[in-house]
Length: 409
Image (tube, rainbow, N blue to C red):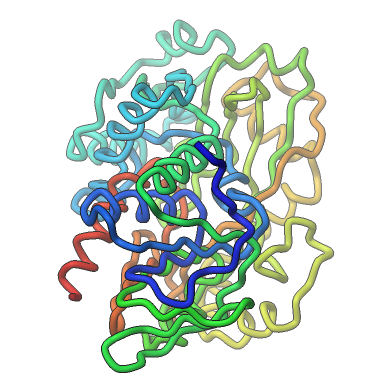
């Protein structure tokens, strides 16, 4: 079988366009072709490779669904999606490690928040979740210490770029096409179809799905969706422990998170490559691709600063912002935060690790949107907020999006 040409221009006409070739976009394309065999479907991706943004710039954790408000899309789709993802990996030979996770309460004052996490996990039907006492923590993570913890044995790690590539191969095997290096600028209804404008011309389609991640709000607004919520980019930087210190951590060790923020705090993760990462930080970034904080885009920064929600958020969470700035500026501070859970890490050596940008939706009211958000416009469905656990949830999200597209028809 000939290798598909992913450098070709998109077709001038097709049935369905999927904008965004990350893990969610590939999963959506795969699901749509499974429901509509023979449909002419094109996936358009701005970058020259799959997974150069959120898909390939995370710790690779397959989340179990502990954190999310019961009844939310994140809760439902993470639990459903993690099971589907493990099954998919087994069927398609994509490797993973079901290494488990401990969420550790270090102090008595954190037990109330741990109770809330346990309540959420039970209501979300997280598989295998159990409460362990302080004396049991070392049986799971010999060097971890705390007064109590939650153990999630079905949390795992994988290479999400490999997963996305496998989805893309499924799309191509089903007759879909993938067009890399093609930036989408906007779209507009033309009669009963949608004209998608991109760097190589235009493609007219009956329907479109936009899974554009960091640029999702701009494309949604261009199609007539409301401006709220706005994507505000947050840079998450990791530290990587030196090999000798990494031996102190078996799998994943997380703190009890702040319930007012959609971030999980500085945690320890042994990723699929075997490295132990500390992080990530959560700093508002000066560009939507500011993997290096010295990279500034005037448009991106201007949109962030002009959004009313930005200033309201900073007023509400300035203390958390100062802590994030300290951790980003001082590796020793970041290591010390992780050492609260694993005291043997005090003074450990760490170097700069990977960095990613979280496409975080922020409401006009200053609230960080803590659930997946999907909007519909004429002939199109837009994924407006899909940060973590979107990769874990990708197969479940794809079913939701396919359902929404059918409802919009």
